[in-house]
Image (cartoon, rainbow, N blue to C red; front, side, top):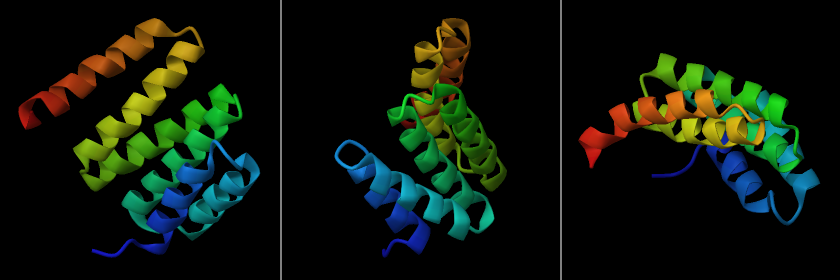
Length: 116
């Protein structure tokens, strides 16, 4: 299965986030600009959230993760939604919002437990 252009951009950005943050940021912005449909928009928003998190722009990162969660939910993709919620939980912890992070963990357990 070949990756869509948006998936490829997101994958490359995620790989670069620790070694070349500016290049990763440009790729994530490109992915957002090219995304079509809920699934791609979710992927691009999560990717941008990861870049913003690496830049320690936690509130903005959380906003992107929330957009991604909503997009994956609209696409009916519970696994990607749960995966993204994990990113959001980590960000909430950095923002000292542990209660909200715990709520997210409970939602993930509901989705992931039946899958083993």
